[in-house]
Image (cartoon, helix red, strand yellow):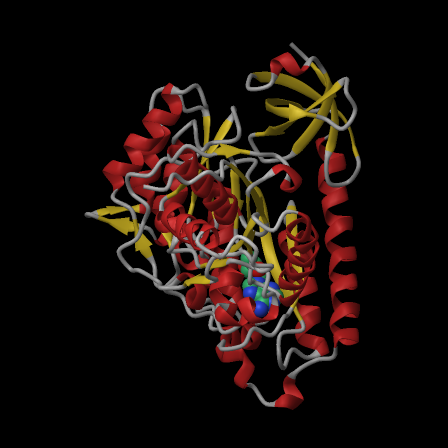
Amino acid sequence: MDEFVAKKVYVETYGCQMNISDGELMEGILVEKGYEVSNSAEEADVILVNTCAIREHAEERVLGRVGQLYGIKKERPEVIIGVTGCMAQRLGDNLLQRAPYVDLVMGPDGYRSLPEQLERIHIGAKSMPSRSSKKRGPQLAVLDLDVGENYEGLVQRRTSPVSAWVPIQRGCDHKCTFCIVPYVRGPEKNRKSSDILNEVREIAEAGRTEVTLLGQTVNSYESDGVCFHELLRSVARIDGIRRVRFTSPHPNDVTPELLRVMAEEPAICEQLHLPLQSGNDKVLRRMLRRYTVDTFLEKVTLARDLIPDLSLSTDIIVAFPGESEDQFEDTLDLLRQVRFDDAYTYKYSLRDGTPATRFPDSDFLSNEEAQIRLTKLIEVHRSIQNDINKGEVGRIEEVLVEKKGRETSQVLGRTRRNKVVAFNASSEIIGTYHQVLLTGTTGATFMGELAN
Ligand code: 5AD
């Protein structure tokens, strides 16, 4: 049999934590088959661009990048370029037409067959007449969504020596009207709890002390009679695991039981991401978020009552179709009321095939109006964040050191409340825990000094 010779793979990931984790999965699958992971596209035999479809902007960036990679293929025609992930799933064959130099498009449920598909392309190219100017294999599209695929039994290549992503759920059963995820990742499917716990035990045995459980609506997890808060408690009690985080939860599935587990288990970090999206009930209804401002606020109050010193973050979309000036102001008011430690802010982006596209044309705001709202929102959020973080200067916090900082003498780490701290120390302390005095803030992140 013809041995597959391409050996170096370069994976470039865009988008959410789940995508980062999928990038590690693809690397793991290929390493298992004898590939090496390369840190540069220029040196690789296979280049995989692992994409996001959540907003148009994310897709444009990727298309630009894929165009750049064409330059590499012009010089080395044998290089295989693949586009994987949510945008690949969304655009499918269209992408192969738009970018004819792309060899493979593969959606989020196709990764198990990645080595096989690469081999088909490679063998196809080798069987072309040797003087052919277009010496390349077939262009392949692997776009089936598979409700049975949760990648059990495959090994993810963990890139951080300190912390590990642990996907526990894939896909999404919520149908928020703005969101493309259910269409590109399919319905919710949960891994068996015993498999997840075994994986976390292995992570701990390998010396990693922090895990982040991942799912599109991670706290809707339920499998073989185990619900999310039960799984979370078991993960938190695994020997060697010192920090547990999870993302991204849906506010509706933030239950009192979950908050109690968070309060009771010392390993679970005092951090909760609660995507609000809008501070107005009418907009929330049109988004099909299935909660109201009041029920959201009740969760915030309960969470803060049960978990002292909880750090809260959120996602907000401005200029959703039909959002009036007053309704936007309601969102600003809610930010001022809740005072989130962090907020990820977005302009509504129309995604073909989602229910929100069916609102009447007159409901859609111009990009200029959307930009004005986004700028205002960011300004309000930054000033709150600045205030909160200034109030934390002077505290001593436990920091897990994750990596080198921008300046060579510095390292970067995170507090339990997920705040980033830079301080002077040798990179030898990466992976260890330290008490750090917070000495200053840029607004979003902190400067510190070792206190032990
Ligand atoms: N436009 C803008 N933002 C979006 N998000 C999801 N879909 C869209 C869209 N069509 C945001 C939401 C979500 C986050 C991951 O991305 O705020 O919580």
